Amino acid sequence: QELLGRIDRLDGQLNSFITVTADHALAAADHADQCRAKGEAGPLTGAPIALKDIFCTKGVKTTCGSKMLDSFVAPYDATVVEKLQAAGAVSLGKTNMDEFAMGSSNETSFYGAVKNPWDLNAVPGGSSGGSAAAVAAGLVPAAMGTDTGGSIRQPAAYCGITGLKPTYGRVSRYGMIAYASSLDQGGPMARSAEDCALLMNAIAGHDSRDSTSIARGVPNYSEELSAPLAGLKIGLPKEYFGEGLAADVGNAIQDAIKVFEGLGATVREVSLPHTSYAIPAYYVIAPAEASSNLSRYDGVRFGHRCENPTDLIDLYKRTRAEGFGEEVKRRILIGTHTLSEGFFDAYYKKAQQVRRLIHQDFLDAFEEVDVLMGPATPTPAFDLGAKKDPVSMYLQDIYTIAINLAGIPGISVPAGFSNGRPVGLQILGTHFAEARLLNVAHQFQ
Ligand code: GLN
Image 1 (tube, rainbow, N blue to C red):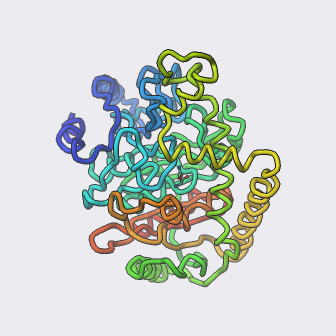
Image 2: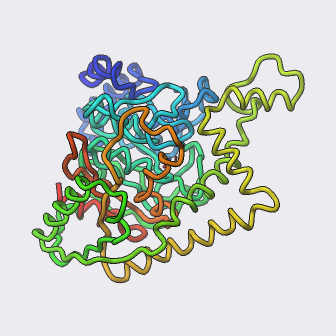
């Protein structure tokens, strides 16, 4: 009730929720009270959370930030939703996001931009900007986000919270609306690594309904939080400290590194030589996969349908023209172009080869160091409306996107401020190093 009241009072300004499920939440909270009374409570029993509106929820609208799905109600819950419910978490609702998770500022949402609670003129980041803003404003202590090319870590950095993108395949994608299937991964966003660990304990694990989910034991992510960092080998990728990095952000990251040295870690420079190819490769691969995934929105099977179609082609054309926003259309056009005969080898195949090299850069680096550290973003949150040109928006993803191409985990943790706007420190580990990342982040916090 306390948090629903806060949402009522504050979310008119922030716009972080698309749907608030007050009745569901109060009923679930009552149930949690009963569990507690019976001595059956776990760590998440009664814990209020929010879900990015990309996770399907039975009986509650799932819009993915798009007019296309404005009235879509899924007939089932995503695995992540089921697991959080089973752990006793209470969802207060569905958070705003860039349309189909395409964006870095939350400005592409059909439901309007989200504002950054630290400064209402600033973007919260995207695409999980609603989740980040809701946590930062204290509307919920934790929320689920998804990260295809930075969409958990970048908004976490801009809003001064902690956000973890797990290893690809660690958390089930079943019921998570697909953007770019080889990159998409759900993960927790919260005020601390400790809280992210609690969510990970609930959501990680194999799911036979997601063929890319990995059958591998799930550690207790809370257990290793207190392990000392003496002897930890930290690598600083020199490509993450070059041109384009705002001086204030660079300084905040250097200060954070000193804290780790004080905790007994050693620091050395490393190189990820193919870094500059990550954005071009991603913006071929992600739109290609998106153009294929979004072909299902045809006015027949899901969501919006145009009025009075004259024939099937007219139905497809007008439904998609009306239902999708500008950025989504741009991605579909790029994707269908790069996948078309005659261009496939030059763009898509080449991008996949570059992806392999980027992956190898990380594997080589993790031969030498335990974790990599650097800024999550080149600048703090920018002003709403400041980035009109799509390419300048895509460049925001410079430090986050290669991680998805490699499938490795990454976490962004708050590391000071630049002109009153939060700065995020990004910590990267090899595949399945989530427990280590949470431990390193926790020691810093
Ligand atoms: N900004 C990137 C994009 O627009 C990443 C989005 C994401 O991770 N969902 O594709």
